[in-house]
Amino acid sequence: MKDIQIDPRGPRFGAFFQLAFSVAALIVGANAGGIAIMAVLLVLFIPGAIIGPQATLQGWVFRTFVRPRLDPPAETESFRPPRFAQQMGLAFSILAVASGLASFETGFFIFTGFVTFASFLNSVFDLCLGCEIYLLFKRVTTRTA
Image (cartoon, rainbow, N blue to C red; front, top):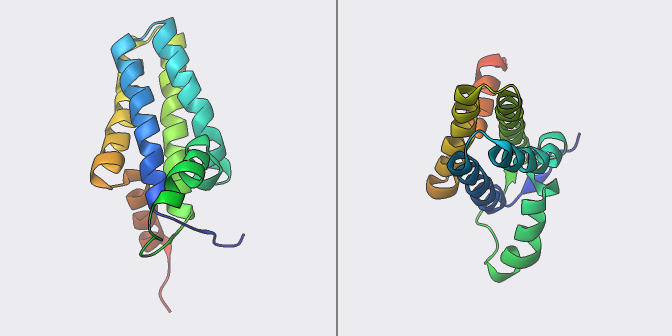
């Protein structure tokens, strides 16, 4: 697959959406409302986990309404680390929803908290935990010539 280059500000913008949904789910709690909010977030993660962050609703909003008002990015980045981060977000969202549906409230709060923490770091500090884990994994598994 071609290594698509993306504006690194897009995934950070998308993390604000994820942060808002996950905080709302934590506030509402491990009931039908909180589970529904996390289910919506889970659906928002799916295109990013399969294709990359450029395919998400948040990516479309960024490209359509935000990006035209900004200067060109100083540099671009591969879509692969942010896609891995989306896959991690999807996994934790699935675990949060499954925990909520199983009436395992502690699991709901733990997994939703992971999504909240990672989204907070990315949106506020531009630190993508999933991207860093992806890059660490690549360094460990890539052989040097």
